[in-house]
Image (cartoon, rainbow, N blue to C red; front, top):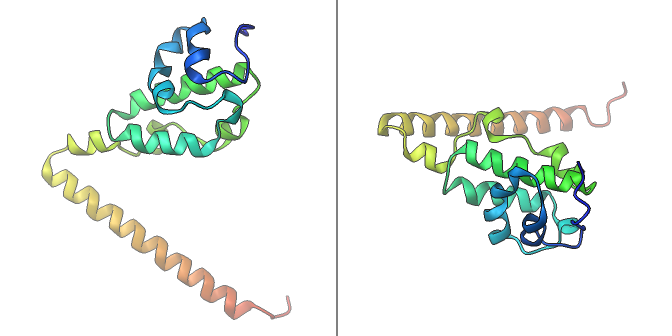
Length: 141
C-alpha cells in the first residue's frame, strides 16, 4: 500500500512522521543522521550509516533499520540503486563492532588474524592478476 501523504522531497523524519507502516519505528536513527530529501539519498549514505551504526548496535538491528528505509523509498519509487548493491549484514556474515567487542578475547584475536590473512590473499591475488594482464598485453589471441 502506497502512502500518498509522503513526497520525495520530504526528509526521513518528515516522511516517518506520516508513514503508516509499522517499520517507521526503525527510521528514528536515520532521521537523526541524515536530513536530506528522500530523493537525494544514495548508496553512500547507506554505507556511512552501516559503518557508523555498526559501532553502536547489532547487525540484526542495523538490518531492520536499512530494510525500513528501503521499504519507505520503494513506496516512492526510489532507492533502486541502493537496493541493488546493499545486502543485509546478516547475509554477508559480517559482525558489527558491538558484536565483535562482545566476543571472548581469543575469538577477537583469531577473527582479526583471519581478516588480515584474507586481506593479504586479496592483495596477492590483485598483484598476480596485474602481472598476468601485463604479460598478456599485446599478445594476439
